[in-house]
Image 1: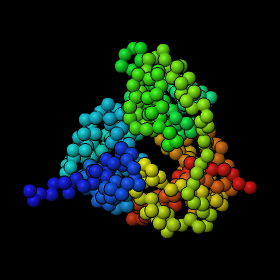
Image 2: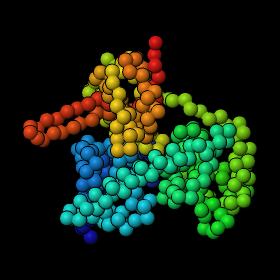
Image 3: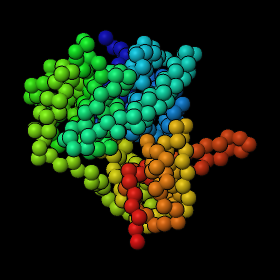
Image 4: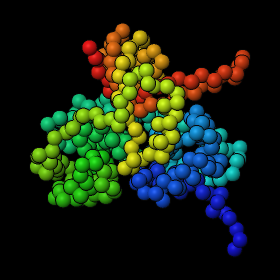
Length: 351
């Protein structure tokens, strides 16, 4: 009818595909993801990206996946879905957007704190002899179970299940996170102890009777008796520190601008790093900053023990993702500072 209303919302399909972890090797999905990142239109998302210090003219999928998307879903995890709905319905600029964004960021910071505290609390309950991490925590709630399960899965390199109270007094309900090696959803569906399971191959929910918790543990250990947790770190390319510069990082960032399910962010081994200093930073003291000449290493979601283990005045090599942190200062004089960074997964000393 000679209207073009859909053009005003052309950025939303790509964000939806990325948020739901759809395949990013599918060309149609990549097309819509590119529309989202290169043609941001949504008034609320513009304000949220800017408030989280992302460059609106140089957005990547990781900015959305690990920045903005968790901030929006933090509202639903806090049982405040109306806040998320109100935010997403802000398709035009309005005075209320800044207030909504402020609330989303506040809830997201709270989510990070709860998630970090839960990981510390639950680690002592993990039986590392089990093929699947299974823990019970009644305080987290449905909105946080999956996030904590994901952290436990990454930490122990195996599937993880976090359970809490179910629909009735005699049941547990919770979330699972699996690995790319096999379908955790199908495996749980084959367990006699599981009343219900649903979701995706690697992420979903389940319910079982409390009396069957040990049966589930035995079933999973049996099905995965030949499974060996692989905590190896894999990387795409390796560089000497002397090869790393702004041009290289910009080139790699452009290549990996659209990442996600089945098209992962590039990981690189950087050699020849010399540690000159280290700092423990962040509101919860869970981020370690390591100075290595022209490259700054950042380790997120860690603790003081990791900080203490980092050797100063030593040579190391590290695996992670490369990034440029751009910091703008407007007073007393406008100044732009660029810092080359490596978001590290792990390091090791070299001799």
